[in-house]
Length: 104
Image (cartoon, rainbow, N blue to C red):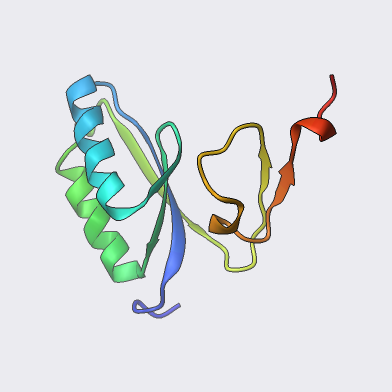
């Protein structure tokens, strides 16, 4: 994939300190959409994603915190259960399992 082609990335984090956690959350909120606690969906090209991760590295403590980014495949799939903060079309191609499909 060329550096200028846009892709979707799942960025996850586990931050030990509440102040650093807030900083990382606010930073990522400027660049992506929160999909769950400590999980963001970011649309970016590879070069800008690398820059974003370098900036995040300056916000965290490497011995105490963990931040990861996963490039999502173009034709990937998802299964979503329960309440979601995202509209269904944010991650197209997914399977939404509603409350009537779950066991009681």
